[in-house]
Image 1: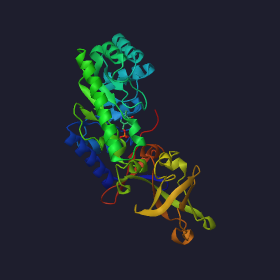
Image 2 (image 1 turned 90 degrees about the vertical axis):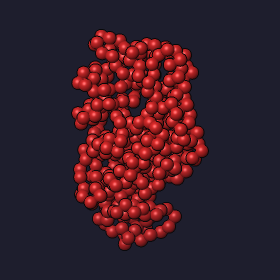
Image 3 (image 1 turned 60 degrees about the vertical axis):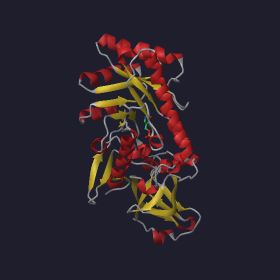
Image 4 (image 1 turned 120 degrees about the vertical axis):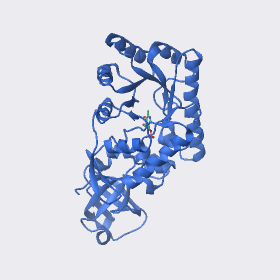
Length: 367
Ligand SMILES: Cc1ncc(COP(=O)(O)O)c(C=O)c1O
């Protein structure tokens, strides 16, 4: 196998999929995985086989790709840009059960107007802002009911994503934000219903909140994405161990600077991505945690800096004979900060099966 390569440990991945599915089942909600993490047909198939119903996507290209693979129930969970409506229409005309989201009157109006012109009733959810993190309309905002009225028959539900959860790292804080995510989204749905309108679906989720929620009363579905692979950011948040990370980058030692204790690898930032998500967390993993070829963590060895196609791995706090211990040609694996960003650097994964066999799994890229 050439390096750098994106490896999926399918045994770990399968455990991660089952763990999240069991949570959704025990909380009494449907799991609609966000496939933006992996953008890979084989991983989606494993998620569906584990019990997921429908998928969430971050681009219409993903919607087209996974619809062509036979997935019909697709939520495009990024605010709908009016110029993309013809692309969404084409998918619906082919029989895709595509749902769109919006958080504004202008957005709702554009969808409804275009639908009227084309004789199509789009399915739309209103995006709710539960934590001030990103987009969405506040549940108490008068605009919520105005947007709902404009959508009329197109309105199928409300959705929120507690992005502020990524900045937390205690079980108490995570439980509190999971409850906030649930309560705000349910509140929005109840306001819409109290005004005499239909609001069937209540969709919440991120990996940290999904794994921390105590109750999802009033919620119909959970969306989580990065749980399929997990990563060092999720480890620092406290929702997984390093032994649960299913994605790693296989790299080769290409040189040394012995006096500095440096091991040079052929995985730089082009392989790992520029994502330094752990930099602002309680433990900074540099560009990644280094493991041996079998995936066993090498204590204290981090990819401490990266150029485009060079990585510099260095032990933190102690000296090691790097040339003797990691000779030229040694293979290592690096656990990434952010699985979605690292995966996106590769056109395909090398999936390591339980038998030890390796399959190449295509990964979708671009928009
Ligand atoms: C709208 C939406 N839903 C769900 C998710 C999944 O979150 P996570 O990857 O933490 O599981 C994301 C992630 O960014 C998102 O933007």
